[in-house]
Image (cartoon, rainbow over all chains, first blue to last red; front, side):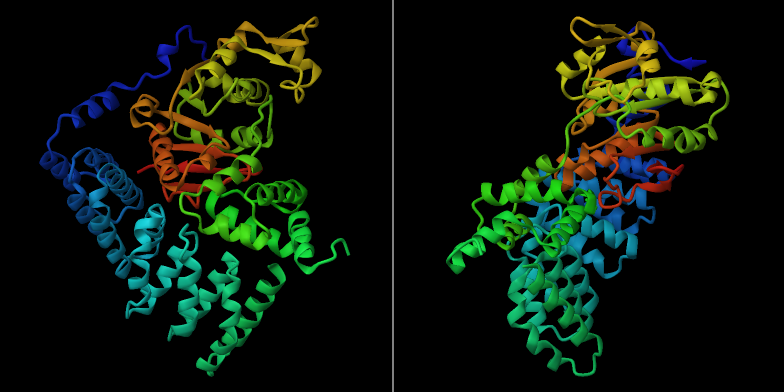
Length: 222
Length: 292
């Protein structure tokens, strides 16, 4: 026992026979066969099949359907990576993928929500087209999740969107979240609209405090 | 007062000094995007590089530079900053506390799923000129008594075949071995005094295998499987968001169930992927592939 000494680099890449056979079999399966295996398999099998699905052109509909029903986080991760891979290979499908993935925010539990937000921020330009609609969504939670998307989104309109939320949003917790995001992003442009915000929420004790802290940080920082 | 006009004063101020609040702003953003956290001890290092980027990008103030960095599509400036704020150097026993975490934490987890005589596979990626995988081999020999009960295979990989060739030759500079004590240098190297080079001994050289790999390529990665421990330090920070998520998935697939990943000391997987379970070891954080 001890450190293994090898004479040849060829031994590095050995896979066990089972893994090798499985991967070879995957490459010859039809879409229907992969889906059937996915539906019958355990999490490990489903994850493997989720990755195989990215090789099937146009299979994003199937991937989206599986994502809605999947409970295992590690499998969802593979499904989302397959969707990302397909969106890169078939950009014409990106918008359709984003429409469906974003819609899942409505009923997603916290860990799926985190995965979705991580997924969509990988496509900053494309998701940017959805932001105004999401910020106008009647569901306040969706508006809050949209602010989470904007937290690291590399898009030039983020400061403008944040400012608009602070000026027009009707729910206090969404406004406070937008103020926080603006401070994180160094959006000093909100300083001219902050003074008028507290009057819109006279019963929200937290609001003047949030505005004061934000003003101090933005004026101090920048 | 340095300048005579308000405009000049602003420019002088902005291009020569970063305030505490500005530092906090960019530090937090950098952490969110790259998973790298700079504490206050790195302040001088970070400030200097940010100031240089403010000048290089033609921005007048920290504020305008930060807006440019934060909202630029394509993240080219973020990549410039990553390149400047990360140190591409390698030497033996760099960040030795992660070696301690391997022996005192990760390997204890890993051997729970093994029986005596089993094979344990360790992968260093990217390994550059080989200092890290050779350090792993040395550290195991000197600090892990259980080595006598298991076969351990150490593999080093990099995308750059030129550095792999150097790694295979195993000839190192004085600087590369600076963290090794004199006994280690004597035991594992032959010193070429004339050229001040250290040639690694044949036994050790034969204990590490080097093989090129491209972490961004499924096909290239598909033949790397069944590792129990992977060191992937300071590599993912160079990838964009999507590539980083895909690379995390490929690393996950290269691990055995229960296997552990170590990232660079200030990197974090939590911003990249939900695939791994965080394991807090005494000296470091590991990311474990759960057994599903």
